[in-house]
Image (cartoon, rainbow, N blue to C red):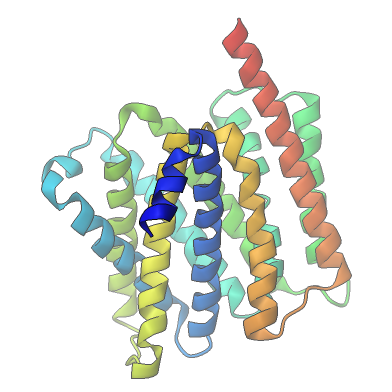
Length: 299
C-alpha cells in the first residue's frame, strides 16, 4: 500500500487528477448499481435517504474540527436551491433504475454536460456559438435515439433520467454561480444535510425494516456516494476541469458492465448508438469550451 501511494504521488498532478476522476466515476456507478439492487426490495425514498445520510455522516466526521466555521455562509439560499436540484436529480435517477436498465439510464443521464453548456448561455450569460449549439442538439438527438418516443418500445420511465439530467444541470449551474467564494467543504456539507433532512422527513411515512442481509448494501450506498464526492473534489484540485472532464464518460462502460454482471442487462443496439452520439457530442462541446478558455487566457 505504501509503495502504491508513493508511485501515485510521483505522478504529475494532471495524471493523478485523471485517475481520481476515473475512481470517482467507478464509485458513482457502484452507488447506482447498489441502489438498483436495493430498489428491488425497498422504496426509492428510503434508498435515497441512505445515500445522503451516509454522506452526511462521513463528511461530518471529516469537517468536525472546522465546526462551526464550516456552516458559516452568506449564500444560504443558493445552497438550499443548489442542494434541492441535486436531491431532485438523485430521486429521479434512482426512480428510473426501478424500471429501466442501468446502462440505458446512465447513457441518458450523460446529456447533462451539454445541458450545462446550454443553461450557462441562457441563465449565466456565457457565449453559445453555433458549433456548441450543434453539440447540444446532437446530444439531445442521442437521448431521443435511446428513448425512441412514438415507437412500440418507448417507456415513459425513460424520461426520468432525462429529467434527472435537467435537475443535475441546475445543480451544476448553481455551483458555478457560487464560484470560488465558498469553501468546498461548506458546499459539500450543505448538499448532504439538505438531502438528509428532506429524505428523513419523507421516509417516516414509508419506512420498511432493513433486513440484516441488506445492511452491507445500505452501508455501501452511503460510503460510495461520500467517497465519490471526496475523490471528485480532490481530482478538480489537482487538474483543470478541461483535462479530466472527458473521463467521466467512462461511467457508461462501468454501468454497462455492472448491468450485465449483476442484473443480466445488455443494452440494445439503439442504446449503444444513442450512447455513442451523446458521448461524441459531449466530447465535442468539451473540446470547444477548452479552446475558448485557452483563447481567453492568451488575450
